[in-house]
Image 1: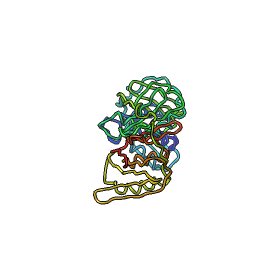
Image 2 (image 1 turned 60 degrees about the vertical axis):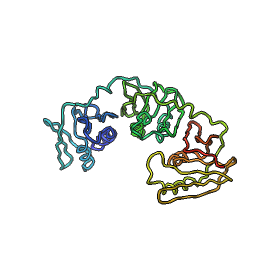
Image 3 (image 1 turned 90 degrees about the vertical axis):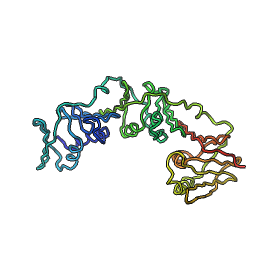
Image 4 (image 1 turned 90 degrees about the horizontal axis):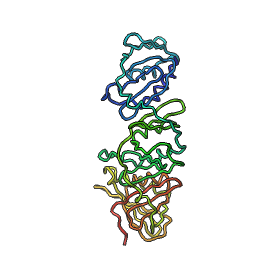
Length: 342
């Protein structure tokens, strides 16, 4: 068979491999005659494989690396007892083939009704994933909340991002772990189906990407993303990201969401202040602003993330939150130690 054809198939299912064999065979490719499957307890990926009627499990790293380094366009593969023997020109290799597949694939093998995914669904996942939490103590916030109504949202407890896709989802609501979503975004999926505890996605060329979904209740974000009344509009200057990156030099040693810079706005000028245990930073620049002086604290990484998408926002009257809004999305960030500048 064509070496590159097999290598391309293995590359598509490779993200479903585990880094360690905590569950037996999760670091192996499982060949099931007409498909090859990987499984790591969080995701499972399968793809059709032609002209290779093999059934069994082969350790992934050795097979993938040998095929990657082989020199010939075509290879010959034969099953001899408990080995799969591969010939590529003058190179020969034998890999152990375990005939019994022990992976718990039956838990994801339920039949599901495939439905067409709305065109902007993948765009929505990509947009909201940056505000998923990385805190293991609140696993529900490590997930993206995909609602049947067509709203996709995420929150880390300090920020909320919502994306409105162009139509309702064809399946019921579910929680998609952000780690799985990041892998899923590499695939041009066109169909979706829900099973018992798993969400399944399919591409036009037959790749099936299955991921375990989380069972919990996502926090109600409605009150936080509602329109801010009596707020003041702020248009941040184009140079602000550069200033924030310079300020971050003095906050690198701090970890977590408590990393904070001070933002002062008055007299058509914005000033960014940062302080560490050993140094301090301050820089000002002109900006378009009409309103009373404002002073608030915010995580500089959070602000940089959203400024990449939009520079206009509304600051709440109480200086407790800042709201950005685009055509089909909303982003709200909670402010730290809000104060009114006298």
